[in-house]
Length: 186
Ligand SMILES: O=P(O)(O)OC[C@H]1O[C@H](OP(=O)(O)OP(=O)(O)O)[C@H](O)[C@@H]1O
Ligand SMILES: Nc1nc2[nH]cnc2c(=O)[nH]1
Image (cartoon, rainbow, N blue to C red; front, side, top):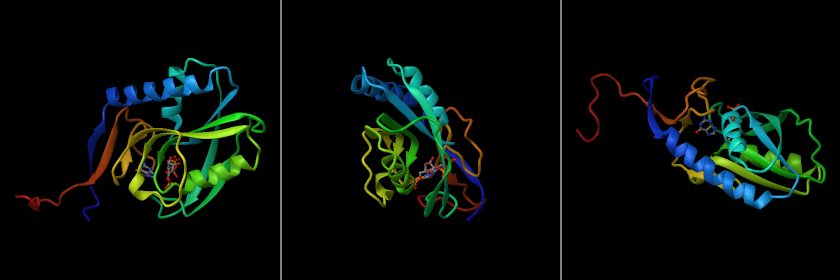
């Protein structure tokens, strides 16, 4: 371990914009004429949600939910607790959960149980990124953007120790090589 990290570009602004537009188009078609409540998961999904709703051609209400997770401190949530509750009523409404990333799926699983207990008319999930290789629970993601490899990603709302959320593109966090160390194919 070097303790130092490099950022490697994974998705550019253009890649992200194209996927957000395509997701919004599908969502707008599916929910036309319906009362839709979009619930963003704090904090990572804030940037994605802001871009997504501006591409929607249907009116929506937005709200947020805060979760705190106790896992390895970086990627996964062992135990999940709701720390900030949506103010909007859930009962009888069509709810679209907006997540930046689904890794193990444990956060989403807990969130879906929280919502189901409040009797929504329907609940679907829109996630910008999914990591299929890491899913530990089966969660259905109706609107998935990028399927990504098992890498830690930052930028576009996603952090590492609260850093990098502001970056407009998405990067993988790569351990920096130790000085003087040869790459394996050298
Ligand atoms: O699929 P999982 O393994 O449950 O992980 C996914 C969750 O982890 C991240 O949130 P995080 O807890 O890092 O909080 P943040 O959004 O405030 O950064 C991400 O925004 C998801 O909510
Ligand atoms: N920033 C960030 N948070 C995560 N939470 C679960 N997976 C990830 C990831 O790859 N990046």
